[in-house]
Image (cartoon, rainbow, N blue to C red):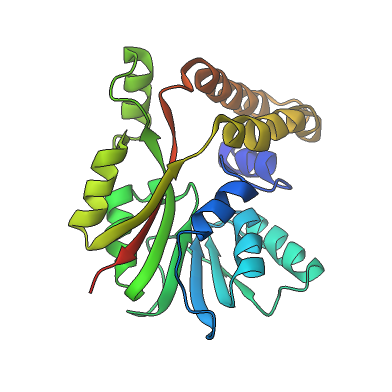
Length: 250
């Protein structure tokens, strides 16, 4: 298996492939003011195995197109939605998030938890805005500095990993400069990283290594993820995911 295939294998059979929680999804939903008397058109871009997609389907009236590049995650989401009787509300689409077959003004809501960084925050804001109706909502979580200053070690790490990492104020400014108005913001708690993402991942390390014959590449995947966990534990006061909910201006 390639390293990418091993990473997918590690993250399969998990509710989420990044920091976040049911509580966070519900909190972000409260910022929306959507009509309840009509079927909404919703896109969940970079949905993974769809923990948040299921929440959207349970709480909103309409159809969700759940988009991800990896069929392994979409298959899991399809199984979940079938078990929960939500197949009439969730349709999966295997596509890259920068190559979407959507029409202009198609959606009432575009959702993306912990995924927009794959094409860059501002690039995503620009590309996805065309798909939103005027007055439609964009809800995204994005890696964000939560202090004005931080140790050099973590600053240099994130600048190398994701040069668009920035403060909340600058992220909001980017939203406003690209035709959105912020309606709500919060950042994820430490539990959303540790309890609902990192600890479940660590619990899968042993079976993952056994399943992959304890190969050198599989061990590297575990070591890389453990290093990420250690880094978060050391510097968790300085960064998190910010959850931004904004409305497309007319």
